[in-house]
Image (cartoon, rainbow, N blue to C red; front, side, top):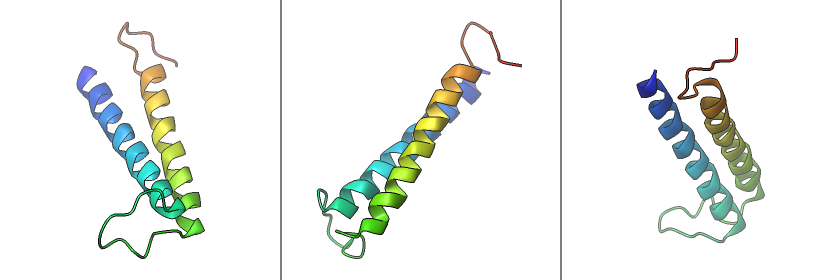
Length: 74
């Protein structure tokens, strides 16, 4: 169970980081070479916010549903 919890935590964290990067690109706060199609486009701010919210949801659900003490929500 601990491996599943760790894996979901990593996946949720990566999803959250990708979403935040998209928000940064969409607002123009982050600009990397070769990513001009994302820069300063409001659609990427919205998409990034949705993806970041999903990543946060995965993290919270992982912490709540797969507690270390063995208490699970049925």
